[in-house]
Amino acid sequence: MGYLKTMVDVMTTEMNAIRCLIDEAGIEYESIVSEIANCEGKVIFMGVGKSAHIGKKLAATFASTGTPSFFVHATEAVHGDLGMIESKDITILISNSGNSMEVVNCIKSIKAIGSKTIAFTSNRNSVLAKECDYALIYPAKDEADHLNLAPTTSSTITLVLGDSIACALSKSSNFGSSDFYKYHPGGSLGEKLKTANNG
Image (cartoon, rainbow, N blue to C red):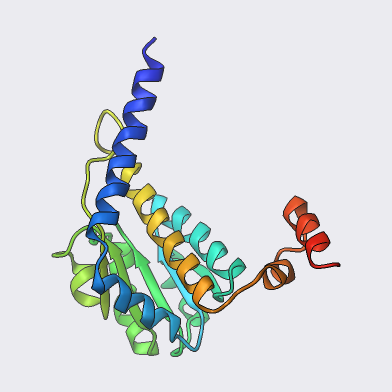
């Protein structure tokens, strides 16, 4: 069948992309994360398509690890959901190409609200990278599927990048297990933390 070879090839492609992300992480990453750390409001993620799914996951991870956060779908944003954003917030707009029109079309309105904007994209020359206040550029790599079309490598890199920021913010704020339990009392994790925190 050849399934396993394809699976391993995909894993290798995505793993190599993460290695490139590590190699390219530099001072500009540090300065952008510092900006997020100093945010007095919430961190809002925005995207469409697979980037929307990644954005939802990252918002949930940020919120559960001590950084107030939620997701706004770019399509719904221009139909009233922009009202969820405040001037003290930071909005992270996700688009691998940096030219997804649904996302790009939100920038002007978000800036009018007063929220700072950060682009997550692989395209330094994209509209998103140029128009946002900050751009966190990750390395552009081939997608892992045989057509080089399905968002695979790009979505994995975005997820890893977002997770790394969430964990860095959590650690720097001295977010502890008792804090985690406060936000996550349910499930097996909640039971484990309940015992650890004498709950």
